[in-house]
Structure formats: structure tokens, C-alpha cells
Length: 145
Length: 145
DNA sequence: GTCGGAATCTCAAGTAACTTGATATGTCGA
DNA sequence: TCGACATATCAAGTTACTTGAGATTCCGAC
Image (tube, rainbow over the protein chains, first blue to last red):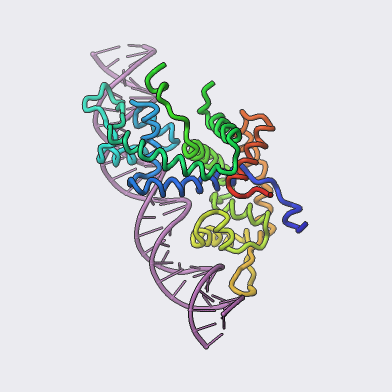
């Protein structure tokens, strides 16, 4: 037993999550490079698939970034016609939706990102995976009560 | 059942981890602002507490960043005398260690960061917490086999 | 109807935290 | 000795955010 090992505090949630996030992001960036999307853009598109019609502000809040940051991401998607904003909005709020092309890109990315996640979670048993995801949902307030 | 709910795919690991990471980082940044440390610097100091004598390159690999990025973080810590590099290194590799002041700052931050993590994990039972941390360690290759 | 507060959208500018590029130097084995 | 590999660190660039700001819409109170 060396001195370092004797006095080692437990690993912090912050350290573990930070480390895992970097691992996830590296794989994600690699997968997304093929279709020239940023992680922020992919995230927004994924959320829109689940919840069509969300606004820029709502997407920003879900991604925990500022509205401006989200607007930046969405602008690129609008330019590439991967999402669609209503031409005549009712009021200020813009109900954004995926285009067919946007949907197709998500479909294309599905297997790529699935396999990336499978690789990351390879050392966990299936029940552990479910448990992990459930806990993460709980912690991040996304759990369906 | 709305249309969105019917067709909802499961939440991605990437989304959950990204979201949790942002939550963690916000709390961490707030706690660290008091002592004027960045997350990268705090992480390096924490790792050095567990493993005194690691080099810049080793710290970079552990944090999954480039050596230059780590050097940038460490420079600030050297300037503030929170870490110490050997004046006469044996060879190229510099065995970096915490100073007493650096250690004191980590001691001071301990309870702050503990309570931040407790808040984040408040909805999990203690056994779930242990399980979560264990799984995260496994996934990020930090598990003691 | 008016007003004030809150929220939305988006342009603009700035900042932090990385990255890649580059160079000098030490270590080690053939 | 040489080549390959690794380390440390200066330099410059890039990305993904942030804060600042202003115009506009919505809604409730008066």
C-alpha cells in the first residue's frame, strides 16, 4: 500500500461524469462529422423528433444553454433545411419542426450512435444499462413519474 | 397519447450524460468561483492529491485533454503556488505535487462540493448512488479490478 | 385602453477551454 | 550513434459557449 492509495478519497461524481462526457463527446463528434453536424445541433434535432413544435427557448432550456446559443445551432439547421420554422407564427413563439431530410439524417445516424453507445457500455450487463439510464433520467429530472 | 409520446425513442446515453455534465459543471463552477479555480485546475489538483508526482502528460491523459491544455491549467496553479514542480527534474518528466496551500484549498472545497453532489443525487437511495458511481467507474475504465 | 412585467427571438461582441502546429530536449534500444 | 518515442511548453487558431442589447409579443392589473 503506497501513501497515495492509503489516503485516496472516493472518486467524485464530477470527475466521473466529466470524464464520461468527454468520452461520449469524442465518439459523438466522430459520428456526426460524417454529416457535418455539431453535437448541439444533433441534440436539438433529437429533441425535436421526440417533441415536434418546441420553440428555440424551450430547446435551449432543455439543453441547459442560453437561447442565443441555441439560436446559433438552429440557424445552421435552418440553412441546411433540416428543420423548419413557421412562416407565419402565431405570436412570438416559433414552433420548430424537423424536415423530412432532417428526419432522414437522424435515421441514418441512429445505428452509428447506437453502436458507439454499445461500445461505451460494453462492460455493463443489460440490466445494469437499464438501471444506469434510469438513474441518469432521475438525476436530470427527465424521469417519467 | 399524443403523437410525440407514441413515437418517442428512448433517451440517449449521450443526451443524459451531456445534460448531467452541464448540471454538474454549473454547480462546480459556482463552488470554484469562490477560490478562483477553473474546473480543469480543480480536477488536476484532485488527481494530484490521489496520485502525487504525476506529470503534465499523465494528468492530461487522465483528464482526456491535450498536454497543452493541461499545461495551460497547471501554469496558473504554479503561479498561485498551489502545485509544485521539481526544480531539478530527473529527465524530462516533471513530478508535480500539491503544495500545502493547494491541499488546504482542496480541504476547504471538500464540503462545498460534497453538498453540491448530494443535492444532485438527492433523489437516489444510497445503494443506488454506490451503484451509479461503480458503473461510471467501470465505463470510464477507472474500475479497480 | 394603457402600462408594466415577463417572455421570445436574434444580432453582436466577448470569453473560456479547448485544439492543432511547432520546437527543443531527454530516454531507450538497436 | 541514430532513430523512435515521449515530454514540456510556446504560439496561434477554433469552437461553443457566454453576456449585452434591442425589438416585439403576450398577459394581467388598473
